[in-house]
Length: 93
Image (cartoon, rainbow, N blue to C red; front, side):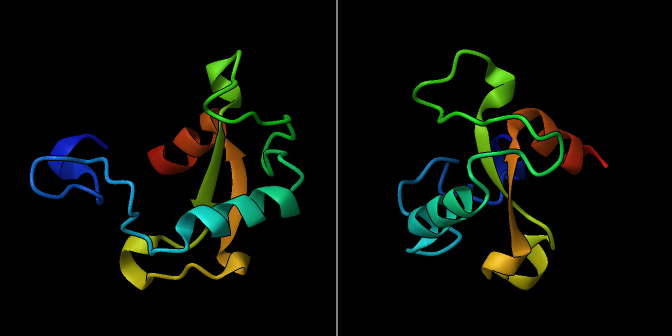
């Protein structure tokens, strides 16, 4: 998901504080984390923020169940908390 393969890629950069998923993305994903009690909904591990992680597999991620690229669905029913390890597995399928 680097460079031009990253859906957030814009003008030579893949990182932009204003999310390509919408201006409310940061708030929305935090609400999903709270709803899911910061627990990966696949493996059940307690997730940590990127700023405080001790084990990189425990990094918290917000996953779109139906691919956002095709339907732009940010509804909470389409979002789930995953750890980094499980999130990577979902996207490798």
